[in-house]
Amino acid sequence: MKNEITVTGEVNAKGQYGVYQMDYIKDFCSKHPNSKLIITFEVVEKESKAAMLSYFYKAIVTRYKKYRFDNGDILTKEQAKEELKDMTMFSRNRSLADLTKAEMVLFLDTIKSTLRAEFGIIIEEVRTL
Image (cartoon, rainbow, N blue to C red; front, side):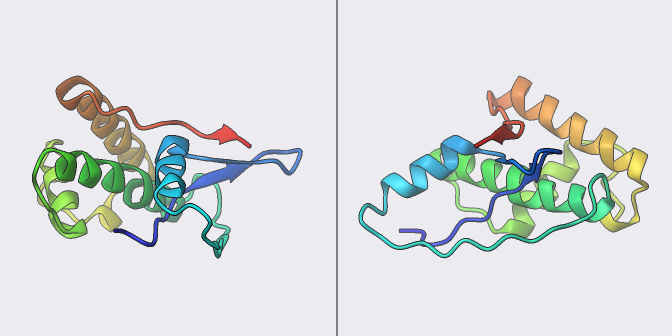
């Protein structure tokens, strides 16, 4: 059983935080009743490429790996990343770090749309807790 997850989120102007993949967190917690948790927060510049890359790896890649696992396939993070990159034409032969911010936004939107249309995977937006 997996003992660690990573999720991303945002802090709003009132200081309230929200996270992506709330159902993923609830599912994880339900598998570990009466357990203790260590929660670590890392702040990154909003709308930075680092934040977008973090969202890609921690929300999109993680959700896609879970979908594939639920359907009998075990992928590494790298394999999942490459499959997701292959779903978009402009990032196939490029490193994600080489994409501009505008290209990264387009990449993320394309991936989310493709996952929703092709696999029924919905990547949740931030929910305030």
